[in-house]
Amino acid sequence: MGVIEMTKKMIFDVDQINVSKTAEELIEIGRKKYQETPSDKLTTYRELKRDAVKSIKAVEIGMISDLLPMRRERMLKNTFSFYRGTAGLMDFDLAEQVHSNIPVLLCGDAHIENYGFYASPERQLLFDLNDFDEARIGNWDSDLRRLLVSIYLAGKENGFKNKKLRKLTQKATTAYRSAIAHVGSMKMMERFYLSPKVRLLAEIVHEQNDGDFEKSLADIIAKATKNDLGKVLKKFTLLNSNGERVFIEDAPRSVHVSKKQIQKFAAAFKDYRATVPERIKVLLMHYRITDVIRHSVGVGSFGSRCYLVLLTANDGSHLVLQVKEALPTRDSFIPIKLDIDLHREIGEGNRIIKAQKIMQSASDPFLGSMNIDQRSYYVRQFRDMKGSFNLEKMSWQGYKLYAEVCALLLAFSHFHSPTAPMIQGYLEEAENFDELMADWTLKYARQVKIDYKKYKKYVETEN
Image (cartoon, rainbow, N blue to C red; front, side, top):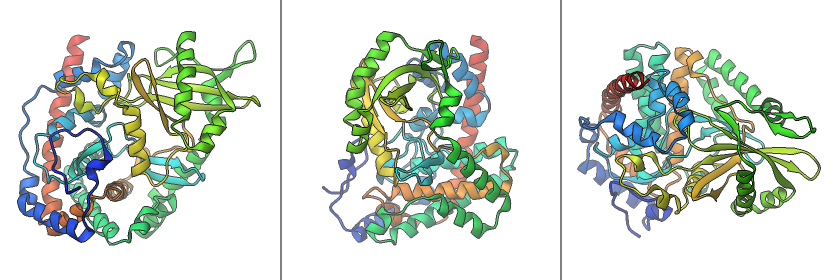
């Protein structure tokens, strides 16, 4: 297959990025792409003509109505929270912007809070992208733009100055560019085994000699390693009057499902087992479902169907899995032209877990998918050795370092795609790319602020 041409919207299929060319040929194609779309053209800001509130309402239609007030409250906390909750709106906006026409497997929502700590199957602590609900094939720069705007908006909420943040978005772009060049120079199998172990992050911090950030890192590592099953059971479950372990209810966020719904989960559990590695499949044969609770999390996904499933083994011990609704990528809702139920049938849960397994060097061994009532879900272990930085408590030096590390990791994840050498060729030729991308970032950030105010006014009026 030759190099593919991008369409405005592409169904997820990794064969779309399968290319029968050498790395050098792909780099040369990237250089030619730059001649067609140089830096100043790629970063041209096209004014947006759309109704942001109407677009957000389109996404809300599919949410659980009882949870909408809490979802809106979370989104309206500040401009950055609003940005987190409107990935689909930005995807729609990005389709109207100029692109380099170089496709890769995208995270789809690479904002600065979608990076975190998690455990590999070997129980090593890793730090990487950790949310793939919006994963798809698309233009590489879409992920970079999503990250850069988040760096600016989250930094503003920390009280950092415009001038500093503009410079930081520029430096983060430089970090991405440098990482693309570095990974591109590696041998294929060296790249394949490249792992974002916490040790790598610690080495970067040590080189930068940032004591505050190093302390934050040490604290988070300590906390993440304590986020084990015992802590989950203590926080989210109790023993009922019959001596049975059950989830703690906290309506409307956490609500038990009906017995009929539990039966549906039990039936779907067999299908889920077929999507995990054989050793996990056999392990799960020791367990049965004993309780299920609907438990919403996050900002953008708050209000979607998300559950915690309590499993009890034949020895009486427990395991907690999170079962999260796998919605079509949010830009599918805007405008509403798609039969969402039909779209689910192609396996949105499978799309997410495939992307995660490709883009992460190691993933949760319990990662799998299932379908219940024509809805697609993906499954993972709940809170096992997971953790993240508190951006609101970061010093400027720490925040700056963190932003650049995230940009570096984004480049690593993009290079899992066979088409990635084209990015390398494109960026080799790019002039003033970092500065021009920073300019675009600030222009879009202004649009986010306008949209936030309009949505806030709409919610206040409706209330």
